[in-house]
Amino acid sequence: MKKARDLHLLLKTIRRSSTTTTPKMDPSDRYCFSPILRWNPEVENYFIKAYGADHFSIISKALTRPSSYSCVRVNTLKSTSDAVIEKLLEIIKEKGFDGDCHGKEGSGPNENVGSPLEESLKNGPIVKCQIPGLEYVLFVKGSGPHMIDYGYVPGAPPKEVIVSRKCAEAVLRGAQVFVPGVMACSAHVEKGDTVAVSAATEQCNPNGGWAIGITRGTVLQGLQTDPYYFERNGLYIGQGTATMSRAGLFRASKGIAVDMNNRVFRLPSFYDVLEGEIFLQNLPSIVTAHALDPQKGERILDMCAAPGGKTTAIAILMKDEGELVALDRSHNKVQDIQKLAAEMSLTCITTYKLDVLKAIRQRNEADDINTNQSSNSLRFHEEKASSSTAEGFNLDKTCEDNVSNAIENGGTYVSKADIRKAKRRMRNGPGRNQCIGGRVENSKGFYPDSFDRVLLDAPCSALGLRPRLFVGEVTIDSLKKHATYQRRMFDQAVKLVRPGGVIVYSTCTINPGENEALVRYALDTYKFLSLASQVSSSFLPLTTNFTSQA
Image (cartoon, rainbow, N blue to C red; front, top):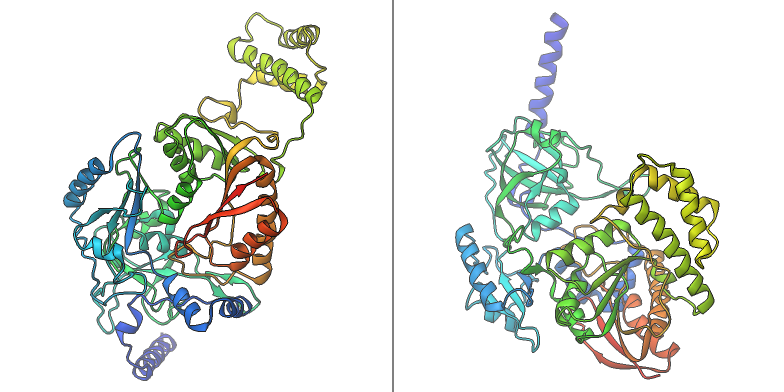
């Protein structure tokens, strides 16, 4: 007992001495939002050479901030801009969103002070886009950055919740904190408590690489002994009310964890608002679909369509008349496109699972006839399996008879493997991916010159998306790989568009190697292409419209 008391007194002495030697912390230095993007040194030097040191410093800082407004695209097939404005004004009034466009800390680099949009937003919380032809685009103004009092008292820090970087970036755009995004939490947090919300960004490991370093469920004390106490300085994104206790935060699988009622950047949330009538989308993405200039009755290809924002924008512009083919190589992403198209009641969109690098299909009439006959015979087995039951039938014999009849009627040879697959379908019924509403069609590609217009919204380094709180994983090699991949996809697009057709290429990055360099490649490689028009590069991503003259 005596040793235990002596040890307890020693620990109290050490704690008291450490408290007196620790410099007094200025809460304004810690409890604020002033992130600094840390780039790979080689990448940073590359961009400095491309843009200049001062300009790149402005770009880097602006990337950490969200836009000062939300951009909404109206589904003109269901509603009008005026009708949507009236509905949104009522919703904003009910939710009590103030719409003050001036933050308490002054204007940030993202607010475009003095721009025509900023001036027009002073007249009301919602305005129409002034660009000709884009009157169906609405701007809903936000505000920020705001100074927030987190209630810091020396020796009694506020209760905190740390969220993942991606969750924090979503919150900065107006989202709530959902359960999967919570990484760590102070002890004794109960439902209804006010908590300060900060972001956990990746840190450089001593052995190389990047990691968050915080295990989900970590208990925070608000002291310097906390994991990454200093790393989250300047990464506080707002204050909110916990909707469940600490135990619930890490036991629940879904739901809102923190109701963000005091944000650094205040943008209205459009979650479950006017579904089918509006779509929240960045202005450059809308400009991309507008640059394609789709017309009714045309056959158009969206090569990398997921999640479907540009796809649905194109379908609305062509009045849902014609054929719009949307591709993605991911089954789940193709389903996302289908769901969005159904939500907006668009019927001209046909989706396929396909790697766009294999989008070209060579013309071979004999193979095409055989393929159609084989697919027809197999489709016969599937339809038979879905419409009949096993009761009173010998399934194996029935399946073999069906195959034999298909061959006798002019079909091609069906392998034993196909017969076995058909037997399993008859026994077990359709699989998960073949159920109604969940089926994704595969495609063997398309013949050259098949489309009037082609949109290639290429996968890229995404360095133009904001807000971004981390870019350390980007390397020179990864930037080069993106550029090489994009050129291969562009080669496919050129072959798929008909003579005299239009290709629109777009990215969401600031990397010249993925933008201007591809434009040079296109014009140098394909002499029959002419640069018809180029949308101002002030819109990110860069959007370029090519016209085929062959």
